Length: 240
Image 1 (tube, rainbow, N blue to C red):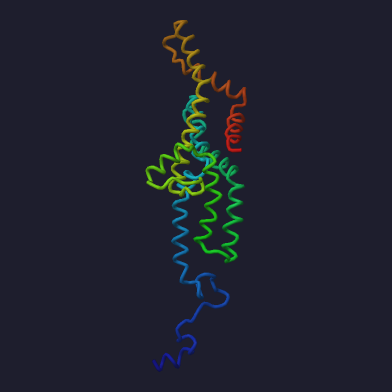
Image 2 (cartoon, rainbow, N blue to C red):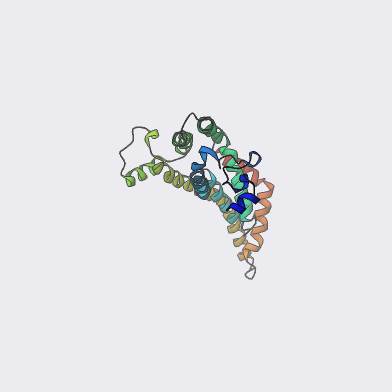
């Protein structure tokens, strides 16, 4: 120990008391260091639940169901690809939810960053605009079903419903709406398939599958009426 004290400066032998000023990392030093593991756990939990949140509490379900019905009606198999349809549904979801996200940021995130409210209160404030959005497109029948299953008292007003009831009811309503729109889209193309099958059978073309003729006709009809513009426009207007 005496040799070490004589060879090395005292400052190098002492235990490190902190990082140099140039290497200080906010959040890792000082009094806030104790909350860092909790923040990391919360962040990883949110990232893990993000796909479920996106599917459960946004119009993404309705949009994707309609797009898959449309592709099946056209008979184009994997065109457009799943990645293309999911990407289109994601950006349309962002377009619809952006004003709502701005409201949540204003009423919850800004006060939280200013340390005016706690994280719990920020979650409560942020969930209120989202609740109002979901209730706007949720059927009373679905809400009544989950209120009964949850054995909760009958609410006096929709705002008294818990998110435990609103979220699954909203998903059911969106699935029903998506299937209704998809069925309406399916009928015109089904008529084309029936007409082509009747014509090919009547002229004795038994060896030629009707789908070989009907698929190009359906695609041509869809392109001529500017189908993507009509479908996307109708879907977006259903949320306004």
